[in-house]
Image (cartoon, rainbow, N blue to C red):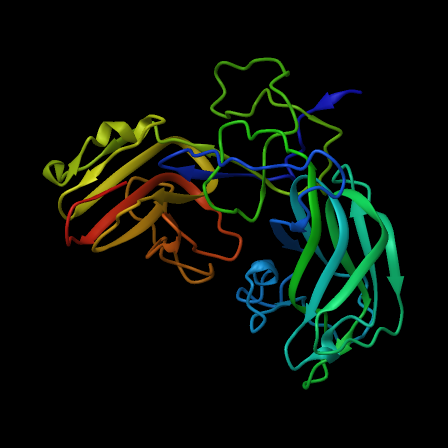
Length: 354
């Protein structure tokens, strides 16, 4: 089998991290062992707007929901889909889908449930026509468990909302089963939080070396890549970290290592240089953050602000907290053009660590 680099239509996204942490996952040895609700990430073919995204499908909140784009016909030219991806290969015995609360009319009327074992070829699991959803969870149980890396629902005929627009809308999706084979390890570690994209992991650095290329993946190769492949992410550390407020940041030189341990003792800004420009976003980890801070990204060594048009014209904002991780979220897909990152401590309370 020949191996090629993925086409330029596949954007490689990276998560710009201050620390690399690889969580430990427990896997069942046989089908059905350690069954339970699987940890998943979600992706979708379209979104009605920037707040009705795939993340709503797996947030555990039945008041939020994902919505496809709206149509003036109940049979759009191409069916929309919602995909759940697993951490490795799973044995799946049940899929549970919850309609949008109060709007069962926008649950798809005709749809398919599908799965894939290679992340490319989709196999029909079940097809439904004239389906009438109720307010409760819609449970789809299989006679025999299936082995899959992903499952999805594909809508082909939609219901209508109160404004005579046709949508495919779902509140929650979850899968019951067990992990039977772990994923390949990400090439440069993983974030401690769940990300909306899969990591670069299934290829190898087997291409011809290009020592003068700034692209860290220039000689990485995948099997049979296509322009329809999903986005993948990888982590990068900054190549330098500087500040004009040296008394406010202790051990700043650790930012470029695998053992980041910056002590914050005052207000100020850290400028992170990642060496070359990527499509990515910025995350930091802090177990004891105190006071207030913002994060920013830019293609230049100054904070970015662009004209109207992007979802966030200013590329600086308060990060979203997930446990001890703080992620800059400037749009629904997360990534922006990034060469430089900024950590701005705007209100100092007491010493904390990054």
